[in-house]
Length: 129
Image 1 (cartoon, rainbow, N blue to C red):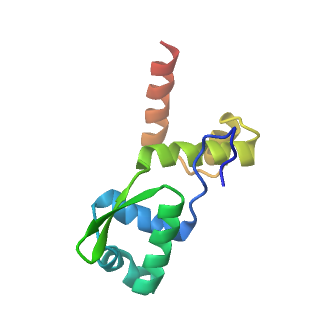
Image 2: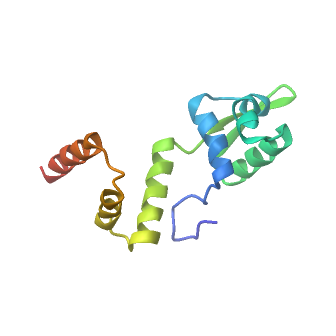
């Protein structure tokens, strides 16, 4: 859980992230609709999806709206905000808070395409203005 002096949201597990991806793609959705998107790919049941949705609601990542006898689920956490938080956590945890070693690691692993490099160069030029 996030501490009082830390405004980052509580960590979302890989399984919870799969549910968030479904909700970021299309929302609001019922638990059954989320299950239609993720259950077959991951060999999950509706009960599993409901458990994950409950966890995400408890983490304030997802909101619920009553809709008759069911609930509609919508993300409270934007995909871009989540990506930013997770990127910062990765850089902090693996690279001591410095982004340059991350890019060096990706370059050494040949994980960057020419398009990636061009995009990074353009971003760097924009940041230096």
